[in-house]
Figure 1 (cartoon, rainbow, N blue to C red):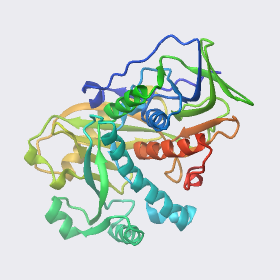
Figure 2 (figure 1 turned 90 degrees about the horizontal axis):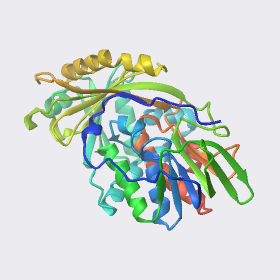
Figure 3 (figure 1 turned 135 degrees about the horizontal axis):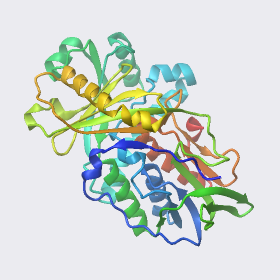
Length: 402
């Protein structure tokens, strides 16, 4: 049976109006053969395909939609090593060794993404930033101070700011915050498109729109059958499909979450906070915000377990006004006007970690699922783990994401 249709976003994301997000693709597919088939042409699939193509693997990419037009287009693209689950909490859930490895690997992934962008000269508004994590109703200043101390002890560049320092430096009235190095911002659609084009230059073939309805594993590999009965024969297949899955892939690892985002009209350069760091808060519902290349404030949050795409999209106007009001409260004295508002869907796990592992019920198949709110950073890790798997090697952190 085909993968269930998922309406992954609504409204108009700001990235839809930016250049360099279109990618050439092939429409006619009868029978392809390759080393690795990558299902999904969003940011996860693009990074996986590029990592494999760089190593000389023959790669075919297939997507049932136009490339870069799914949940990638809805991303707010705050690139951070910090997970949705604080290091202290993750250590309590999974053990200190596991948690520390996950955070260190995430930190390295941000740096690796910058290297990929530089190596292939991808024009995607990449900018390195600091990140500011504000005390909120879920974690107060004492918890953030403990979190910052733990991160610092294991070599992560984080420091605690008290109430007075935070107010004097950033003009933000909260009881405390963690300031971290090693973050960045990017245009996610340009990034995904740039990775796909780079993979194509290395020989990868991209097909769209073709929906995979079935995977048939056999001794030599796997045959992917499309909805119109075309076949892709591969030694291995990677499903980088978020939380849209075919039979044989895990379905019960994540919760489906709706989220909303806005972008303001352009502001004066003087209206921005020190260093234009990424800002997010330890609150539920939480707010996060960043700047853009053209001097807008981009904000998101108001996450909900609302699963109906129709109800999610109907809520966009209300959620957008709520987000704008929160930004104005956090950063007073600025004349903010709404310009873009959109909604998206993602999959979240109890630990904040994705599922990056061989498919349990499909031989020669690998799943990259549920990258959630820290999706682009996790996608970099997924590409590294998949590359090791394809080459018969063992990634040292693979077990973190199983």
